[in-house]
Image 1 (cartoon, rainbow, N blue to C red):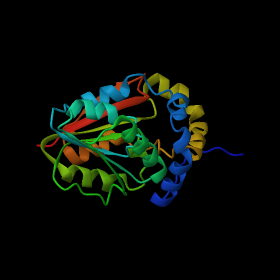
Image 2: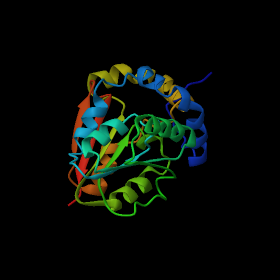
Image 3: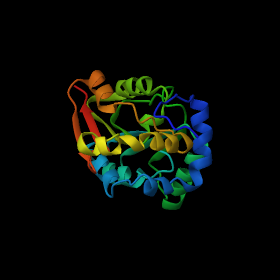
Image 4: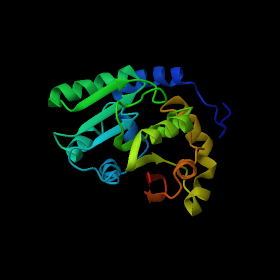
Length: 220
């Protein structure tokens, strides 16, 4: 078997079917890919949410961030979760029912086609941006829905730079092989650059020796 670092994008329907299959054990991948403890909470804090705010999470999955988002906006705020996979959303819906969360709205949709009924105060992409073959289109559409002064944040993984990047280069074909067979996150997308091209000034925080990051921009 020949391993390669090259990436070929998958269409949205392929992504939907893959995540339907992964939904029942998706939490396993947080362990597999060494998700830093507390990074979800840190990403939500970067949104600077206040009571009664409206927040949109794109690629909300099984709802791993919903409790944090709901806590940040309070019972009078609104959390909107959008995901293309009905399998992932089914588990998020079960969570909402179990917790009796009435201010969380879950919507199955391609994020490029979903439009909120009114502007939102914040947008979060959490380990979802790199899985979208039309990520630039989704990002632009999300930015349009953000009110002036609102924040868009993206938390994701990336190939490390510096010495760790040099040391890990021989293993990149194996990493790409694993990603193609699991979460479909394109490791070659330079997410902060794409956000900067759209929003101008951004902030970037690297975590776990540069293997994870949180970037954010405020809409002027």
